[in-house]
Image (cartoon, rainbow, N blue to C red; front, side, top):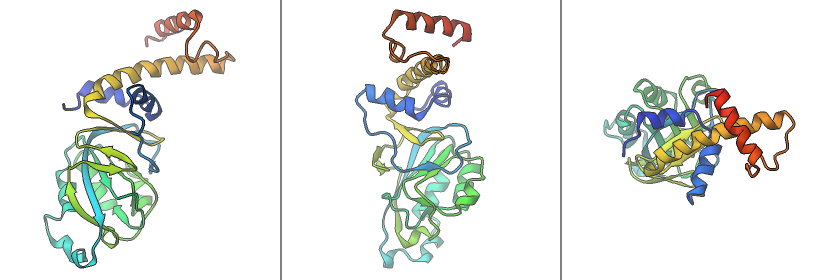
Length: 238
């Protein structure tokens, strides 16, 4: 099922924390990519379907610098084939000793209309990437060329990224905190619930900042909390 425009817009308004809770309610405990951080946390949410690239450990005789002369090299090919609106997700085996990509490839993804890029390894040229209006997430900076550690092998296959299984077409959401992966068949219902949860959490936050106790409020176990939330929603058009 393709990501619906309405679902994409909803996911742009909710946090990865809220999405993790919505997924947990459905039995999914391991959808938050571990140890990746945004290079530019001031950007809006990244939302898109996963398009994947898988690296294996490099074997020296098969991975010299000359492999880039091949126009069909999997890394270069994947950058040119990642669809507009998708999120490019790289399985770097949580190894940030060498770059998963750098500013030139990331810039190419950006101008092609890709929604963002995530690796559980590292990006080179990270100061430049942090200035781009394009969401990028990695573990830490990594200056050496990817060829020293990584060998690009498979395009758009199931991968692991930061201990999370990622299937092509899964919906990837990133915010200032990190990245969560939503199984494709759950995207619509999780997005709808997350919007509702966000409205309630915004109400609770306002009340707590006014000095109200969380007991009976969060979760709303008292009838008064439910009545107050209904009135708040009406007043806020939420």
